[in-house]
Amino acid sequence: MACGSHEAVIHDTSPITLKRLRAYTTLIAVCIWTILAVDFSVEGPIDRLGKVKGTDFLHFYVTGSLARDGRWDQLYDVRAQYARAQAVAPASPDTLFIPIESPQAALLVAPLAARHYEAALVVWLAIIILLYAGSCAVMWRDCRALRDHRYLVVASCMAFPGLYSVVLHGQLSSLGLACVAAALFALRRGWRFTAGLALGLLVFKPHWVAAAAAVFLAAREWRVVAGTLVCAAGQLAATSVVVGSRVMAAYWQALRSLPRIAALLEPRPSDSLRGLFTLLMPSDALAVALYGMAAIATLVVASGIWRSRAPIEVRYSAAVLALVLISPHVGAYDLVLLAPVYFLLSNWLARSADITHRAALAGLLCASFIAPICGGLPAMFRMQLTVGTMVGLLFVLWHSVNDRGLVGACALTAAV
Image 1 (cartoon, rainbow, N blue to C red):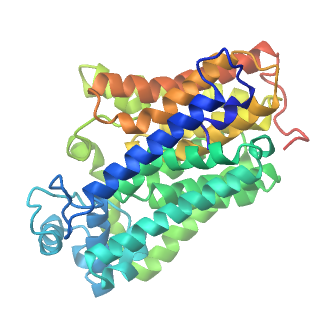
Image 2: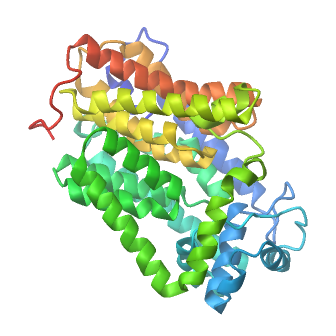
């Protein structure tokens, strides 16, 4: 995928060479998936480390079982969900999930709840991997400069720690990646309203759809924003018809409670601008204020790049980076949404010989690539690696575009 493919144009004197990247990506892939296989190799729903296999999938499985049984009154009942979770995995008494997931997620997982937990998890992980693989295939299709590097692309896709985190946690992030990949596919073909429809599907994670809408609103892509709002409203309306207005009201109340229970939901700061300032600032009010200012600055920079005459790869990468940076909650598994950035910038580096700051861009891509696997680092260093590399990439893209005198030019170019 990303970390290695762009190195087709790196000279042999660089510490980042094709040969080394093939070796690194292969080694990373073998290591992370061997570790996961050994961890999951014991019988039962509990892994070798004493945690529930698929961790967050247990919560989705419980909400799916409630939906399947028609117990919508318990969808946002902490005690009821804890009791069900203990019935599924009695060896994990310390596992407690705060019910804030959307009803759409419960409906999505409901068919799997008819199966035993372990069987349902296998199916769910297969779906996660297929969504990821399909998204990568769609992005690779438009990256012609990467077609001569099949092994490196496939090895990088398999080695991407973002995918490992998604599988480890059994999260929904691969579905979010599929939405973003579909939107970028549509944008390349000038289907802006369709791209908005794809982004609107992200409403099952409200903070993602809000971030996407903010990015394209700042970029003045009105048709994209319109498609996003139409699809999001349609999904919520359809869900309300299925689950009823009382459930949707309970969901709204759960969302409203998020500021009060943020510390419970995020024992460690998330990999976002908000998480960074939460870690650095002594008070929540100051952290939120600085996060707001940083988010606005990020949108200004990303919109400037978007409305320039920069290559498609640069403009689309800036939009995705901004989406992830300004989102108020970003787990390690959510960094899988950065996959398009690696494809796009790898393709740009591989096909263009006159890119300024090439070495910095390549180094930042590699550093951000491995960021999701660094969850064991102390919070300060982890945040500096994840958020720092994303901010660094956005700055390098802005600087590269600014050096060429492209900032502020019309964005609707014939290349799109």
